[in-house]
Image (cartoon, rainbow, N blue to C red; front, side):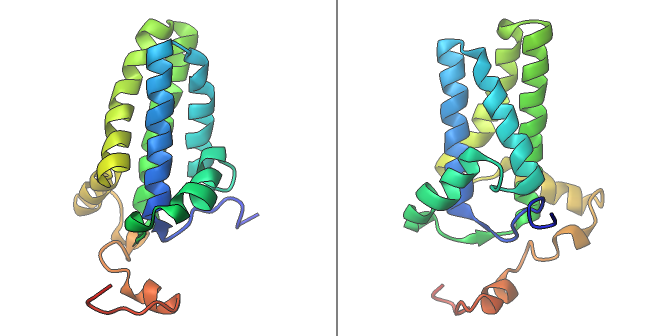
Length: 170
């Protein structure tokens, strides 16, 4: 069970950006069509990715098996803990939107998706992870111990252990 409920570290950035683009697409589709039911798979996806990385997430599986490996220009490995934190923020936002939809209605819930669209767009289109930036701020503020992500600044040991050459050209 440990493997099922673990988050990958490091994470292939191409897969992370693919997931973000899928989230942007689903959020925009919900906003344009008023298909509030899309909150259900969005929320499930974020909760599943927080709990198990891509293992239980259909979008995560698509990103790691299909789209991520094909996005060669985006291939690089990044630390997992900040990406998990970013997924947790998405889980909070989509859960809040889902509860708001059930209690108040879609007209109020849709506004909660706007920050998610912005953050996922930054990640998907530009490779800038807002959740990862917040994670770094929390480490610097000593609200998250550095030991949670000792590798955040230097992944060279992981590359070497995986058999990759760690040179200036890479």
